[in-house]
Image (tube, rainbow, N blue to C red; front, top):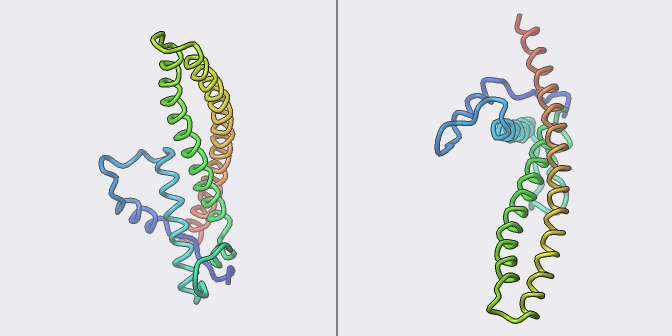
Length: 171
């Protein structure tokens, strides 16, 4: 079935991208948001093209990968990797924000001189654990960011190759 698959036409990507309700101006081309949404549209196309060729998911979604994943073209595999990396970056960024918010309260409680020394020490210990968690999540976010950049470079390179083949065959 993969030999029958077609990559998403550029005009399809552009049309779907314009249809997104951005709640403001759309992101600039090449930005992280633009790349992620473009990749999501690629994956939407991949599943639709798989269904066009007679693919059937065979029932309930379970723990196994969707059957259409086996028929993804190389640039669609790169698109899926980019979306996955984006999710990891976002999760770690959210955790960092939450830890920073928590740390502020913990440090305030640790410095509260109206409370007992034991109370302040317990909050100081909690803030030390939070600082350690923060360092770990910053490291994980940096790792996820490097993976995102690599995935973005690969996707852009593969998508450019798809587009250049289309231009040569159209001429």
